[in-house]
Length: 299
Ligand SMILES: [Zn+2]
Image (cartoon, rainbow, N blue to C red; front, top):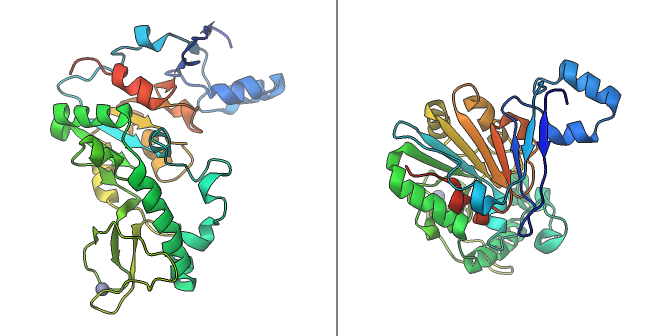
């Protein structure tokens, strides 16, 4: 790690790493690699660089206000399952848990809907009940406050289908994977509508006036995410990009940071290093509900 500076210090509240990768290197792969692999990375990894800084801080002191937003900045925020998990909504990717009895392809795809819509509604009825019991955390409230301050200079894009951003006060969250508390017709072009009902078997599948079946307003596997035109327009204008609690493996969201890389500062906030960590200017590792309230300086 030629030219690098490494200073590590564990805090009692949370082992927090502020990983500065502005000159770029995938830290996880670096530490895991053998020396020959490191030489390979140094030659071939587009993220590789001659300098890497790693620092650990007591975030309560040193991370306060480290993300500075000027009056000219346009901020794009991408949230993922991690921020909802901190409010008690289990992630699909977590081991075991609530969803272990369901296979994605049996409950979250157009084919699944055609094969067994009752099973699909059983799954989404459980998800509606879980989400209805969840409350937003300080991370959600911080982003809602940021929206009130920045107004149309903030674009909040979420991969989450729950309504925790709205409950916290966000008014313009864009749900690229749909919304759990909305449904739509699987046949006609009627707009998605609010729907908090649960449809557990053996209940009949609800029907539209056109005769079509009412389905969850969710972007299933094999379907195109929603609002992509608006999202990429906002990405093209962003000067600050912040990803919160997203694994960095689900496309197209995982590539958003690459779209802004040349002209925007990019930050990651979440408990685990994302798969695309090397694409960010800085990664703040810790619970977003603990970190976000202190990260932003005065706007
Ligand atoms: Zn219809």
